[in-house]
Image (tube, rainbow over all chains, first blue to last red; front, side):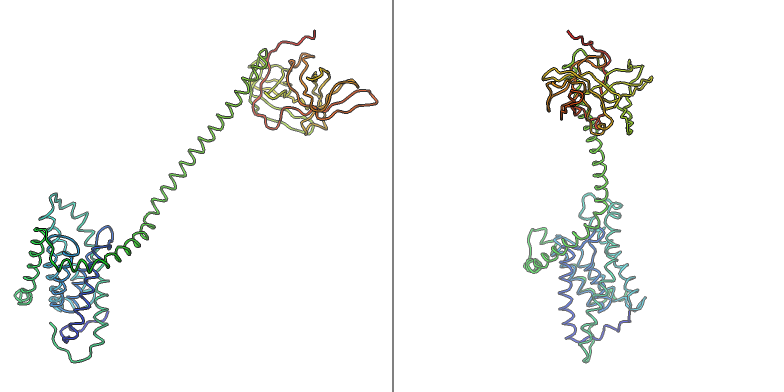
Amino acid sequence: MARLKSSEDFNLKGAIIYSAVFLVLIFLLTVLQTTCLSLIGVTPALTFAVVCAIGFILGKKAGAVAGIYAGALMIILGGVGASLSPVLYAFCGYLCGAFVGWFLSKNLPSFIIYSAIAGVLLEISTVIYYGLFSESFLLWQLTFKLLIPEYFAFLLCVIPAYALVFGIYTLFKGKDKRKRRNFN
Amino acid sequence: MKFFKNKFFIIVMSLALFIVIFTATLSAMGQTGPINNTLNVLATPFRYAGLKIGEAFDGFSRYFSSIDELDKENQSLIDEIERLEGELADSQAIKEENERLREYIEFKKTYPDLALTEALIIGSESENHSTIFTLNKGRGDGIRVGMPVVVSSGVVGSVCEVGSTWCKVRVITEASSSIGAYVSRSGEIGLIEGDISLKDTGECVFNYLSADADIKVGDLIYTSGLGSTYPRGLLIGEVISVEVDGYLRTKVAYVKCAVSFESLTYVMIVTDYDIYVEE
């Protein structure tokens, strides 16, 4: 996989295009995830993986905004009354962008590592959610029946999510050859 | 860390927290906002499409995931079929035995003076010039040489050899066999004898009839009881043709035996009967 250039060189028009495309994409993926997506018995957090990929490829601000939007959609379309999704998604989207270049270079293996860490945060938030709202909370049962399958299902989505975001990024980047300005 | 003090990060997280609290509050109050409604309306067609795609994938994956179940079910059905086939075979055997016993009872009612012993045919020797059955009853069961062997449909033959647990039966179509017989319609008497040329057709010859004997095709032939080998009144067969020997001035009738020897499994040995005495 080719190394990505710095994401801090978008102009306003490019930012609008990316925003529109990713808003629609996240919306569709959230519908997909809350409707029919099921792997190894659990629903993988495909939207979360895409948010991480947006943060990683487009930058921390894009990741944070996409995270808020995706988190809010998860609450609204997922039908859950209360969820920490907006905070978690925005946090992880932001971190994936912020950590780029700090510890690891900007490529697919690095993204997989970042995503694996983000996935742990996602599962921790699940534990908190169940701790707060579930009446019969059994950690070991939750771990083996939900957390571990959900975590691996999420990891299965990481590479497709990266390919999707990277593909869109590459597709629209080629149409924008004019003078670039800092988007971050 | 430096980025946690970033103004943008703080604004974003505050906004996210506000969304969490706001949506949770609306949910607790049982209300939905206009944005919620709009997004759900927008999502409806996509949800429907997603649902259809999901159903298609679900059906596809179920096809493969259910192979093991189908395999087990198939094996279970095979076992069930084998069990039912076994039961069917048992049932068939019981049915045949029931029919045989019913015939035996009917035969016993028809001939109450006959003492009968049922025997199973355990062997059959069929050569060019003889057909001999081996039965599973012998001297130990009271079987003696010369005892008649019958089935409900007619006469089979007589015991020609006896062992301790077995005996052999020579059928009436054998060339060396002869039985005193009479025509049921007219009472004409004669001798039923085997003929080597007719053995395979299941026929025998009714000899020693006078030239003016009253016999015709379709007449039934019974044992006469004369000669003390066979009891009187057992069916031998039906006349299928009658010929006149002009030189000897006698008639010869050909009789189709009532018993089908090829399909016999069980027979009855007549161990005792009242000897017929002509009045």
